[in-house]
Amino acid sequence: MKVTVVGAGNVGATTAHILANKELANEIVLVDIVEGIPQGKALDMYESTPVERTDTRIIGSNGYDETKDSDIVIITAGLPRKPGMSRDDLLAKNAEIVKSVTEQVVTQSPNSILIIVSNPLDVMTYVAYKVSGFEKHRVMGMAGVLDSARFRTFISMELNVSVEDVSAFVLGGHGDSMVPLPRYSTVAGIPLPDLMDKETIDRLVQRTRDGGIEIVNYLKAGSAYYAPASSSVEMAEAIIKDKKRILPSAVWLEGEYNLTDVMVGVPVKLGKKGVEEIVQIKLNPDEQEALNKSAGGVKGMMDKLNL
Image 1 (tube, rainbow, N blue to C red):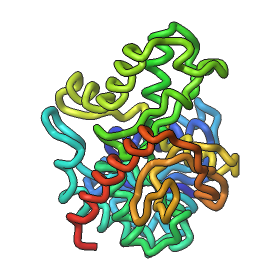
Image 2 (image 1 turned 30 degrees about the vertical axis):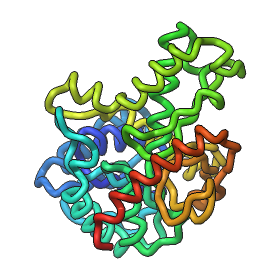
Image 3 (image 1 turned 180 degrees about the vertical axis):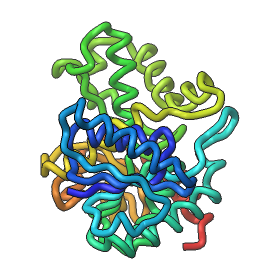
Image 4 (image 1 turned 180 degrees about the horizontal axis):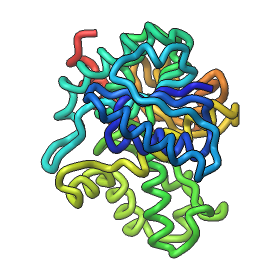
């Protein structure tokens, strides 16, 4: 397998490092426009492989020739959020960046699968989908995996239980209108509403929605990257190993969940072909309304772009 990571900032570099440590690819290409940064970080990672005992070749580049015939391309390029910024504030600039990156990626790797991490996530995934011209099963966004991981973390912290026993789903757009589903969240198979009261659940749901900005406010001059990187690698691993994992991801909907022509997070089955199935779970009226509202917000941003 050959995997390209576009963007050698904190998210991209951490993603490449995790991919290498898990030995998920024979070759990893790290691309960035800043001269020397991808080359230096890639060489540093490469020099760690004898210690980690992983046979993965890692190279850095300022161009796309080295990315030729990649199986998976993970796009993290774009401006990060700063305190006071919403994901929506990044819309125009990052759309321009993702459009340019996608055009160059698909020229070199027309048979690749694209995983988008750039914010605002759902809309950037839409940009990559439209610009690439790929079938919808080959373009997806990393959103629900990260949001669900945050929800799982907060549940684990609240109950003082292992994160391994916590399962959770977060649907919708990757933003303030995301839709955590407590009814489908469990601890060792026990539904979350059986373990904590509504007030506590609502507090954890809100903290999940604010998960990204909470970290931005701590860091002051950066945004989250460890959990986003781990989440994108989990998706890539499911594809590389054909694991058929059920993971919430931003995908193009054509009638599923009563939503059409919108890129939004729902549960999907990930395997060697990419998105192999959109899994439809039953939502109650309140959950469906929340998902509709979230999708409407994404659609509003999509409509601002001339694609």
